[in-house]
Each structure stands twice: as structure tokens, then as C-alpha cells.
Picture (tube, rainbow, N blue to C red):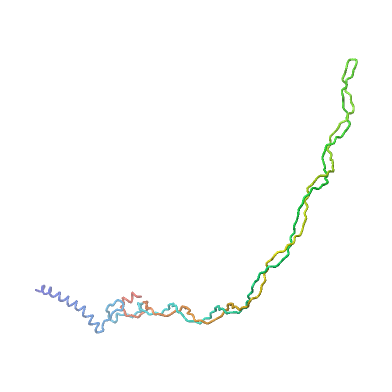
Length: 251
């Protein structure tokens, strides 16, 4: 019986133990006797907690500058070209044509030919004989006691030698000669001439460029930096209350 009672009592004891472990911390924390760790969330008593500084993620609003294109109205000076009328007087002229009697002359050359006797000197190269005496041997037949015998006999003989010479002769021959005769020939012609007369006078206007200045308003683009807010997450130091175990890990 005792064993059976122990068996039936064991689940009751377990249930009461679990209920105690769940209800006791809740009641103690509600009464202010327990505190939670700021890092791991574990419930601890106040003397078990330590105040430490650690880096925590915090949302921070930063002010930054961004470039923006802004148009501003400015007053500028502009140079432009204008035209003004300048009076100018002009004379209208007229050309008249007429015929004028003019005497002109022309030179006429007449050519004629005729035969004329012209003295001519001729120089001829000729061969002229030159005579000279030379010794020569002549065979002569002489009658001797033994009979006729040919005997050579030296004698002088006249010889002629042809030498070059120059012979000048005066002669007359017919030659064709051209003669020119110049004569002036005068004649009358009609020559066109021009005569300019003034008919009228008028005034015309000519455009002359002139540079002028004026003030104008223009939109000038400029880059300006304008502030804007951005939400970022940064790691900032923060004082928290944590257990001894967590405080050792942070250090």
C-alpha cells in the first residue's frame, strides 16, 4: 500500500514543482524582488546585476547635404547689332552714242623684184705645174769592136711637179633683188563715241550696322546644397544593467 501511495503521489509532486518554478519567479518579479538582464533577458536578483557600458544599435537621424539644380533670375547686359538708315545721294547718268568722222592712215608696202649685175670674186684652188731639173740615167747603145753594147749615161732631165695654188678671178653675175616702197594711205571712217549726261539725282538709304547694349533677365542654373534628414542605424555606447556572466563577455 505504501508503494502504491508513493507511485500516486510522485506525479502530484512533479506538478507542484513545475507550478512552483513558474509561479515563484513571476510573483517575485511582480513584487520587485527579481530583475531581468538587459542583454540576455535572464531574471536575476538585484545584487547579481552589474551596470556596464556596451555598444548598442540605435536609430539615428542624420542631416546630410545633397546637390540640387536651382535656376536663379539674374540681370545681364547683352550686346546686339542694330541697323540705322544713312542717307546717300546718288546721281543717275545716261550714256548717249553718236558717230564721229575720223581720219585714219595706213601704211602700204609695195614690193618689186629686178635683176642686177653684181661683181663677184671667185677663189679657186688649182694645181699648178712646177718645173725642175733632175739627174737621170739613160741607156745608150754604143758600137764597139766586139759589137753593140748598152751603156748607161747620166744626164739632166726637166720634170714637172704639180703643187696646189689659189687663183682669184673677178666675174659678174645676175642676181634677183627685192625692193620695198612704202606709201601712206589716208581714209575717213565713222567711229562710235559715248557721251555721258546727268539725268536726275536721288537719295537712297543705306543700312549701317551699329552695336548697342541692353539689360535682360536670364535664368542661370546653379548648384546648391540642400539639407535633408536620413534615418540610419549606428552602434552607440549605452549604459545597461546585465548579469555578471554577460558583463564578463562584453569585456
